[in-house]
Length: 89
Image (cartoon, rainbow, N blue to C red; front, side, top):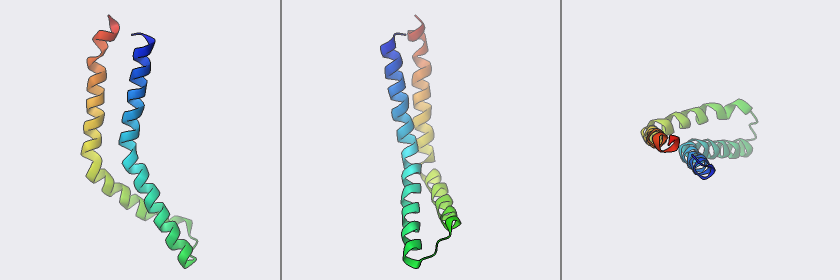
């Protein structure tokens, strides 16, 4: 495997990583922002208040997007494993 192949594989791995992690990160960001706005409006400054809503939102997103995430990661791993014979020779 030449250096261009390694760079391509690394770029593809980073793209898959961003695609799979984006739903969880964006959900956590949005829920945290909404909780922060509510806390600012009510002047309730409890740091642990946002933990449970974030946890519940992330569990819901994992239930909804989990199969897609697993399929995406499995397809990427299958492509990497199938490319091993070409990389060795």
